[in-house]
Image (tube, rainbow, N blue to C red; front, side):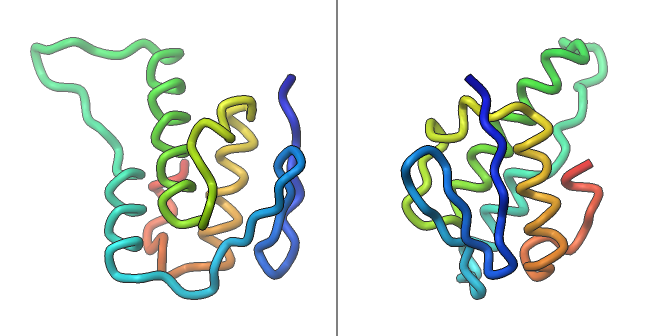
Length: 109
């Protein structure tokens, strides 16, 4: 069953029975990894193109991985039950409240 989450102003939220905290400060490695995971993956000319559904699944996968790389204790598998819109909302919150992570809002579109 999919669940909605509410992120508090300080970056804390509950997911299932566990609480998590989006840190205020990130290491250069975390910033690099986060940005890299959210970079759009272009279709290869003459190669396989993804359908809309496949692209959404791919983006959801990278949204889970990116969140897990900057939120201590969060595993990507803990986010698997969340719908794509909720995953996107997490990254929109991060872009709005932790701008050093996401210097380009196109990454979360």
